[in-house]
Length: 290
Image 1 (cartoon, rainbow, N blue to C red):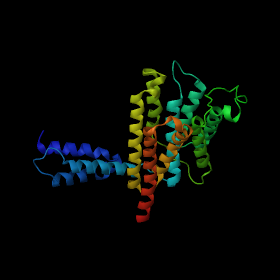
Image 2 (cartoon, one colour; image 1 turned 60 degrees about the horizontal axis):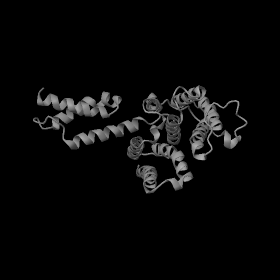
Image 3 (cartoon, rainbow, N blue to C red; image 1 turned 30 degrees about the horizontal axis):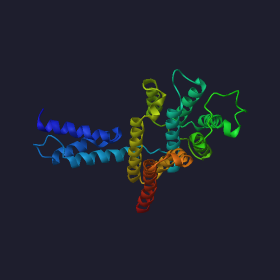
Image 4 (tube, rainbow, N blue to C red; image 1 turned 90 degrees about the vertical axis):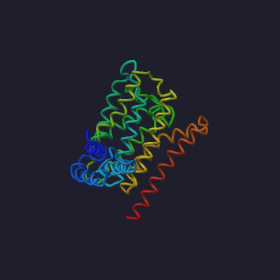
């Protein structure tokens, strides 16, 4: 392969960081410009150019991911509810040794699909049922819904909080005037699918393994860091709002179990909170500059 062909192939690979619609409209122009400005003897793009293309592609994808026809707060609330729903059911549904509580599992899947598709009128009653069922020992003292007893009943507020966050967010979206919500990517379902797959491969105790805890912490820090950068790109607080909603159950758990957390735990939750607060500050400042 010639030097020029190798360089062009690598430029085209880097341009995959941009959305397809952007590449269709500007891809050939960008490749032509980059090739014209490059050293004829160079086989690889300079590191600075590669980083700039990747960063620019991420910013373009963040702008392209904004929902059309919905205000920023509704879009952010929808994303936050979806994040809480997928991560909560991923961690709180036991799939071993077989489908335990099949009605609960089926209801969780239907609820997640309804949120992804933006079907708030279907999702809201399912979310209310899930919240009431998980809280029956606190709300109904465990007796009123004993016949239905198809889901887990928790005795700690921190375990019930995710379900009430989902229900409250959907209730706000349901009474919002205006058009419906856009459909989200089916890739959100990979979160519960991955965690349920780990249950089959490792067992229910995987959530307590140190490698899992470290991996989850690293992913959360990276995602919230990406939220901060996306906020800079789109100049509003929709992603920051989604991240704040996602943090509510975790911060509730932290508050209910302060004695169980050492310095590392407080540092971890403090870092996540700092990233979310920074995203809101950046959103406010970038909006003032525009």
